[in-house]
Length: 249
Image 1: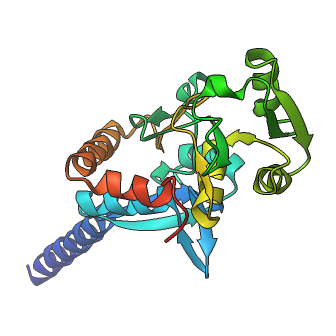
Image 2: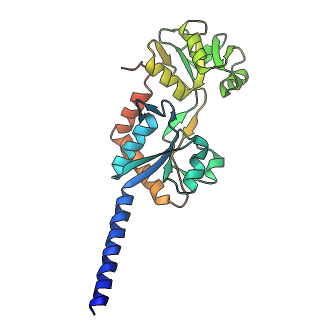
Image 3: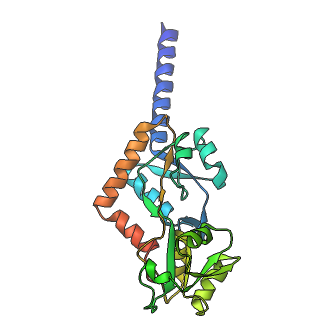
């Protein structure tokens, strides 16, 4: 009788331990990211930071969870998610039909795409139509080149090898504007005085947080958290911090 009682108590203890462990795990949101793409996610002074990082931390807090970050190369994000190395992948991932075949996405949480950067005191370029006839620096081999060639044939393209060269030409006045990806443009403007990004975008690419297809409730919960953050002003504050048209303060 005592043996059976002891076995029962041991079983109950084990079950309680497992339940506690499961509950503890339920409070953790494991997120895969490639923190090499400022201002979305990058490492500064040995710490992850950026728009995606702050937004995910805010989402987790709203959900009552702690974030456990998993660092992985971008190309491994979707395979790592599918193989259950983490619960969610967030790393400036565009929502595409091809990716949607294998993973689910949250609602779009930010719209990237091509934008125009000019000097803050440039009065000649205030809208996209103003680019016609102007010198515009672009990086060779990027979408910016083909887009301007097709949509803005009157633009005088100044093609360079590196992003930094492209920005420098605007800085020194050898180009009237630069066309590049929205995150890169805002990161540069955030850290350098006297520059701004036009409000009107050339193209729009939607960013989404990727989750497995077998966790629809988690996708729903993350979407709910994003909605709450937009309603209480937290989302707007994070956007303003990382995508302000003014230089860093």
